[in-house]
Amino acid sequence: MHLAYDYPMLGAFWTILWFFLWIMWIFLLFKVIVDVFRDDSLSGWGKTGWAVFLIVLPYLGVFVYLLARGKGMGRRDMEHTRQQRNAFDAYVKETAGSNRPSSADELAKLSELRTRGDITQQEFERAKALVLNDSGRTSRTTSATSSGLQ
Image 1: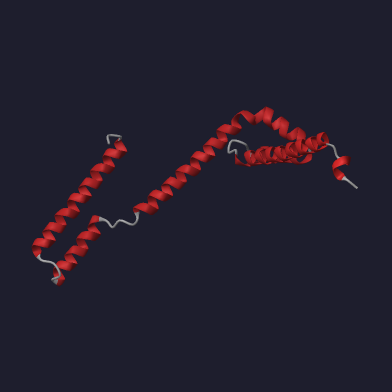
Image 2: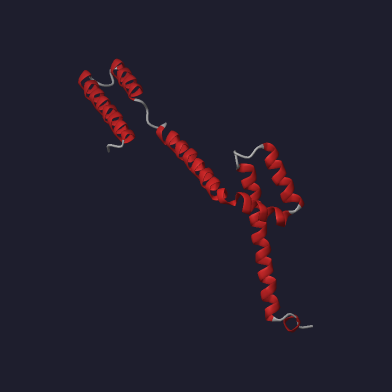
């Protein structure tokens, strides 16, 4: 039995085409279901109605949903992406910013070193000036950045 002779090239093309169309439809169905449950403006009963409609009549449900509410799908998706990006940025800033000790902590450590006699009074004053100048520069940079003047 030679399968290549029983299944012509055009038949293979149509099979692949229908397979990819089926995959695209499954993707669209899940995209619509995710959009239904992500939409905050839709009430619980509205979400239930759309979910039942999509489960009972999936082909018709997807097409009706795209006609009725498809215009806002992109907007809702962009808003969700923006919220995720803002949450990630806030997490990174919080995590990256927590490694640097505050100027009060640095001054307390310097004072402890001075009282133990590990550093002299002159070294303490010089290090204290560096800490205070660095924290002043950081606060000015932060205020300039937040006001958009940098």
